[in-house]
Image 1 (tube, rainbow, N blue to C red):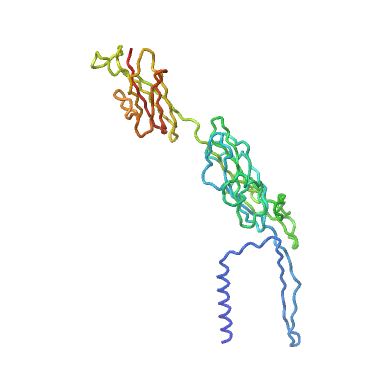
Image 2 (cartoon, rainbow, N blue to C red):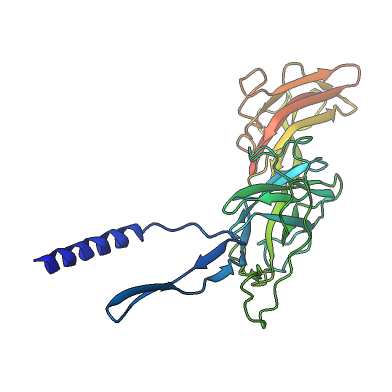
Length: 363
């Protein structure tokens, strides 16, 4: 019966151990001393004896690992001439110890990494570390240029900041964030790059060996080298379109001539309608603040209240299907001193057209 009790206790203990083993234990910190002493009992001539072994001691080595990734799902949208454009990265320290990280950037990345070919470089490029943990670049607050004493399993945002050129037809720039693991141990002191212990040497029990266990940081296998204490990630700045394929077609149509009811001719006194059709052939990119100006030609006179702006009408019957003063925001005017017609169109959408028309009489 006693034996049965013992057996039940052991089974119960085994179950408890198995349940506890489902939780993932935290990494033991590098430099931790682990000691162990064994005990032996024995009997001499019926007398129980006990003795201890010598103590085995070793220190936990440093398993260096970390990741650096692009912390955004799309390219950073920028405008030509924009100052202080920002793209974000995240560095996570999975080393079993606090580490510094040295940071640098490049604008040359593996060919073919981006779907579109980069065609401009940023000016005044800099790297800053998120100081207050809000994940947003705050000029004047985020001024650190290296990661200082990042705790195990902790992450930090890193920003690459640069100025976009104001000239040229460029639309894509690429950047790479390169991180190198460095010695920690002093807050506010920039550590030097870690050097891996010679792996050909036997483990030294009382020395903290350094072993690089890092691999590809961001899963693209482009640029990262396994187990070198370095990581790299890529991002891009994408400039909006600087121009669209905008064309203006102008036509003239005789409306009436006071002589012929059918097929009017361009006779003195005849009314002629001018039509200006603005077409934006660039899909998805609107042209804003479109202003048309047209000087009424010599030997003609502007017909008051005939300026209209709207969607192009059916050719040969009507130039526009809207008029000034509607909710579309179209505006226009005629300057009698310069004989100039002006038509303002707030926006011409991509792959769309807007027309303006006015009439004159032949002197």
